[in-house]
Amino acid sequence: MSRVRPRGEEIRRFILDSVQSNPCSISKLASERFGISRQAVNGHLNRLVREGALREKGATRGKVYELAPLVEWQGSYSLAASPAPAEDYVWRTDVEKALGPLPDNVRNIWHYGFTEMFNNAVDHSEGSTIGVHITKTAVHAQMVIADDGVGIFRKIQQAMKLEDERHAVFELSKGKLTTDPARHTGEGIFFTSRMFDSFDILSGGVYFRHEFGKDEDWLAERLQPDDHGTLVFMSLSNHTARTTAKVFAQYADGGEDFGFNKTVVPVTLARYGNDQLVSRSQAKRVLARVELFATVILDFKDVPAIGPAFADEVFRVFTAAHPGTRLVAIDTTPEVDQMIQRAQRAAHEDRAAKPAAPED
View 1 (cartoon, rainbow, N blue to C red):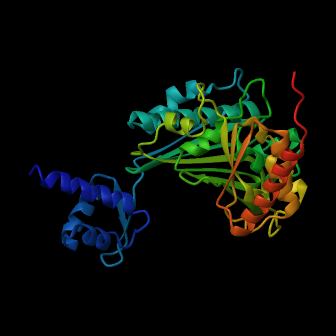
View 2 (view 1 turned 180 degrees about the vertical axis):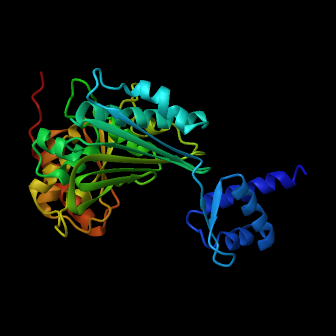
View 3 (view 1 turned 60 degrees about the horizontal axis):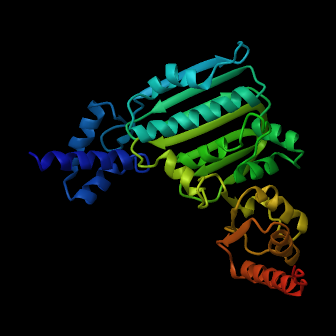
């Protein structure tokens, strides 16, 4: 029995982890994976249904399995109250209890993400209500935080005098962006987006998403913009080994203070539609505020080519003006590499031609 029980648990864990992407073929998949009969797999499926971890739909041949919600909870908080609801109080009294038992590292991620996003809505949304909805299965938990305020991207656009809401998303993806520097560091959304398996913001005419393990963010423009506030979606596995400390350390570029001094800039977000990155103004959009970091990773994924003016502004003009910021280009095509090297050669020639400082 000591051998059978761990194997049964392994099979059921595989089923739970795989059923969401294979709802119709999970029995066949598990049978092939573990070399057991379909009948044996059905025994595990039936047990998971009895335990409430799975639910089944359809007749015998067309039966479909899906994760069953173990927790469905929602709460609403008025911002008209004085004082406004405090994020730590809402966490302790409502949200932590709704999430239920979780490993310490998972609970710490939820604690950080919820309190940061709830506090942002309290301080910045200018709305009247915040709603929180939690769904938890045997595999993962999901949370939606919604407010009826002015919209996060519109608020950033107006406060920073940016071109549009899409530009606001681009700045947000770099980190260290806040409309209230006296009370906020601008780190909360950046780090929260990096801690969860998936992190989404839907506001106004723009949809922003980041998935764990991917350096790039992506955004989409909505065909029918919605003027009603901001929705934040967060999803996390109940069994992840991730920790808040590991995520913070990922963006600390050495040194003794382990501060937030490294960021990744998805260069493709500076493009509009099929526009190519050719101008100095586009380069300046990419470079806005990056001097706040010691190391900046410029991710050129999905950027097939850049123009000489764009490359010159980034890799000659900016580097000369900001020697304390190191630019590192990744995921470059040969065409992008060629332009970068051209600009770097020009920068080297500038330095070589510069007269040496007089000796004392």
